[in-house]
Image (cartoon, rainbow, N blue to C red; front, top):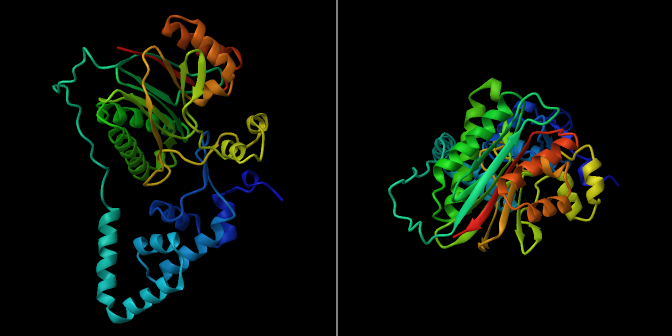
Length: 364
């Protein structure tokens, strides 16, 4: 039996097998009903899994029956004939109520980008006593690519990278939008604030791609680490950009990659080396801009003075091993030298992708 990772179908094949047009499949993705199972981080191509064929045909049948999107989402979460019977009675008893519900659904789908708080430059932060990040960054086009689709931010409370996809100019636009919104929205208050900033970035990218044929299909990964007012380190990630912490000489990865091969490794279906060599290595299961909503991974960690952080795109980790990263992080005293050393090592191995890093030190 083929493993899940080998069974992914591009939208054309999925359209043929499901009997639904690519246009209709995209509309279901836009409504949050049938989000592609994976997306190629290089090309932006969407992939579906065989298990989604039944869902696609079920969604189509329910839409033909006139069921609102919100009710279809509820039915997919908890399938039952009772829900279908209740819907049939509702149609028979009051057709006008159905039209009202559909109008409400249209209004909800028309809601614009989530708003986010403006940066408050005047708030009192007790900066003399708060833990801070001392950060540096470096981004490089690499040895192969024609343009740099990565974007970074480094400040005293935020370190983040974004790895755009979708080709020129889409990838560059998506990563730049994500980083700009993140920088504007996150002020260091809480993990909730960082999550809201990432969700706002996702919706902004989704809306912008939908309004421009040139930007259609664009998206980006995101990995962000921030210090918040209670002294914790909070991390949010989507895609395969990573966060590491070096504590007492030990390097620990704080994030999980959202790619078909990484998930296969976690399920025990292939080794890490097999994953690196697999043709679907760059295919992501999550990214910003793929759908109107996005699932985040997030966590809070203890911020320990003297620990070092690394936030990086896959252009680094595809060329440089974890042991080599740990060694460079530990032996180089100057963090700018650390950042430069990591990027230069990736370039010396071929630099087949854009390479971006933010190195930070937690200090008082």
